[in-house]
Length: 567
Image (cartoon, rainbow, N blue to C red; front, side):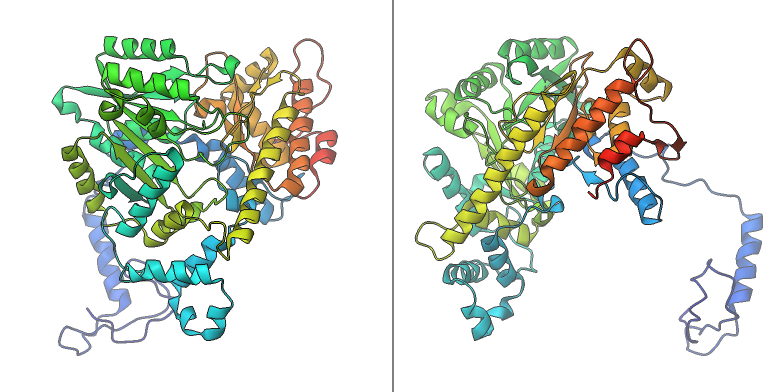
């Protein structure tokens, strides 16, 4: 029935509040039928009393088991606890810090990394082209910014309209030209490039295409490095696949050992698992390692021998800080000649979310297929078309990233200055935190040669491990929770990425602002000393986290003094 009388703001919709007095409703013919809220509510109560209570059609017991089994540690229990702490701080509860610091995720601009001006200037014109009609606004912008925006706008109906399901043809062309410049290879076909809502969406699309349904009688699996980025374990499970782990060698800088990979393949086949693909992350997340051209050639050779697809996660290719440069797998594959160059099946992923750009919120990404059968590419296109199109601002952000200002362009000096300032600052922070971890008792940390993270190994005493078990926590989770409660630093336990048996790690970003970074490092070192003293085996502990609340143990006066400064 259409409502005829004005709604009383105190009265909810049908089944809501009983307060607010009667309300009259119009019949379909428009006259008042005389039935009030109270009459309707009485009728509802009578029906509820006589009808059986129906069970929820969708419940935890009846929902998809793969979804329930999926885990994503980057936004796991430590982050949930951090949210509780933030709520407590907002309500006025006193703690030894004023806010938490999200060191758990590679989200650069959330930790105050400045966006690059050229990116935002072009995007601002795309999103509000009326600026170009104002002579003063137009004159205030560099000519190359205006030209780039007008070029994009001339090749699409509007930023608010759907595009081709693979993405704007002009941007895909820019991606193919970027890859050719980077690798020194011929420009590829735009038909093999798919723009996506971040690289993660592309990974899920490819897994969906690769994994066959259980009722086919085939059990498909994917080789994934350990430690790994939890996107892979979660997505493989969602699509009924099996994760086939291969461990990286921490003692040699998280290097790739081909014998270890071969053993993982053999173990999987003994379990009836058909290895369809192999993921590698270069530069590594969470490990920070960069693969050499020799290691990449070995992977290509192995993929050709064993008959599986390579998934090259290369989203951190601009984040390189050590002496070993980033080399793309496609470049190495092209240099190998026949039969590998034309037969090894490869899918490469990239994003605008990392590097000096850090534009996570725009969700721009791409993947390129190499030597993937055209029939399969058509099926991938079908999956992409179900989503209609990637978001358009993200596509434009990708186009700008792969075609930045060049020497001679009006925007180049500012772009180069901003870009280098960000990359060099990240390099200094990577060095600073690695050195600090390696001075701590019982901590070993490999060099962070790339990406945005440090992944130290921590030796936890028997006493600490027993305390963790008593609390019902894994030892590394226990350590990370204690760190959060004492300092406000939110990191990710190593168990969320996978780690060798008997070892414990955690992952932290190197993203807190450089002008605060030495203080953040100080929080890590001071907390670790206090923790090691409290849980030292043999004899009484030299410090205590005495007291407790709903947020766990509170730190000692020493830790309080150490971490009371505003974060």
